[in-house]
Length: 271
Ligand SMILES: O=C(O)CCC(=O)C(=O)O
Image (cartoon, rainbow, N blue to C red):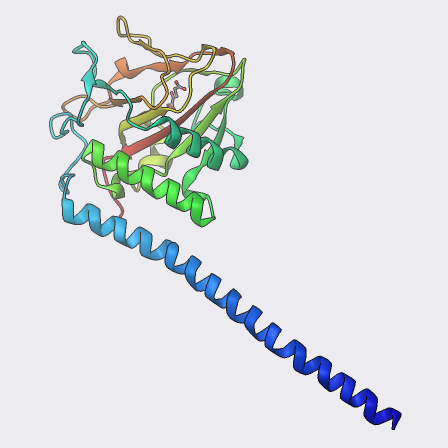
């Protein structure tokens, strides 16, 4: 008698539980499907690349010379013949800048340089191309597409975008972005994708004091960080030789902090 009763009780419990478990599993599956529909990383990137290729906003034959560059919309050129340097106000909105800072800050590592002494660049860096989550990938892809479109350069010529963060007291000493021809640095870094051509930088915030970008060989070429402003320069001359007047520095942040993103373009693309 006892036995039967217990069995019945167990049976009752299990019949009550099953539908709840089933509907929970169904709800979870539905949620997963919805999330998938909302954002499929592979599809998103594929779509963006198709969009770029269809628009042909950039010239596929682009080789990185000065002349083949099509000026980005709303660009203001620095009044100098020594180098091609341009600014674009409000390239990103304040919200876009804040989102990039939020997404990139957890991935910071000490910044590196390809040659020179250790205290040359004291900031920290996040490599946006290595960030794993869908939200991070979306932020990276959207930014890359926007920069490549503005510069009229195919993304295959681009290095992965870097986020850079300077605390008070940090700086990036005077340097050039091109690889020094005829050196081991050039051999190592330029052998596949070639020389660096354009640098595209965006200020994501405004330090309380300091943190200007200064082109030391060019008069009146100290740029004060402004939220969302892009600053781009061609590291090469018209004939493709390196332009030493692009020597620049990230001045020390004396108060507050500074957040920027930087993208470098190359004269070749992967074969
Ligand atoms: O921080 C800056 O203003 C300059 C950054 C820079 O020189 C670079 O990324 O090459």
